[in-house]
Length: 228
Image 1 (cartoon, helix red, strand yellow):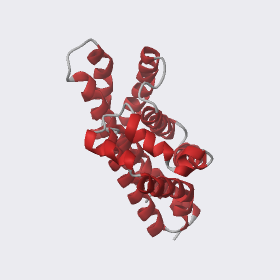
Image 2: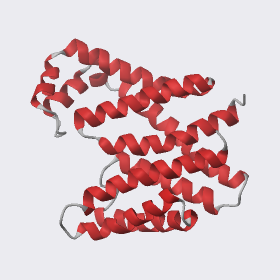
Image 3: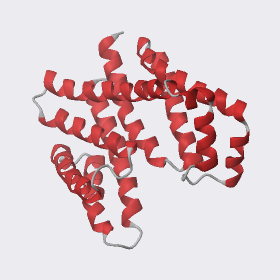
C-alpha cells in the first residue's frame, strides 16, 4: 500500500468513526449535541476529501474543547485511539512532505502495535488473567450491557480460562504479523473479529472503527520494513 493510499484510507475510516460517535450525541436531545456538531461536519469534509488538511486541523483543535468538557477522554481507550489517529493524520498533512510526514504516520503504526502488545503483557502478568478469573468477573459483575444469558458464561471457568490465554497470546504475538504481508492480513482480520466480538458482547462498538482506522498505517509500515 502506498503512502497516499494509506493516508486516504485512514482518513475515510476515521471520518466514519468520528461521524458515528458524533451521531450518538447529536440524535438525542440535549445541549451536548452542539459540542459534537462541529466534529460531525468536519468528519464529513474529511470523508469527501474537501479541504482535508484544514478539516483535520480544525478537528484536532476541536478535540481540545471536547477533552476539556469531559476532563479527558471520556470513553477511555477508543477515544485515545481516535485522537492518536487524528493527530498523526494531521501532522502527516501539515509537516513537510516526505520523511517528516512519513514519520508521523509511522508513529501511528508503531503505537498501534504497542497497544496490542502492551495489553497482552499487562494481562499475562496478572494472575487473575492467567487463571481466567478476570474474564469470569467481566461476565459476572461488569457494568457493560451484557445480556443475562451471556452472564451465564461466568459459570464456565474452563472456557474462559482458554479464552483468556487465547487473547493474551494473540496480543503478545501481534508484532509478528509484520513478518509477511499475508500474515499481517490474517493478524488484522483476527484483531478486527476480536473487536467486533467485544462490540457484540459488551457494546464496545467504537473500538471497532477507531482501531480499524489505524490499520492502513500498519500495511504501509509493513511494506517499508519488509519491501516486496
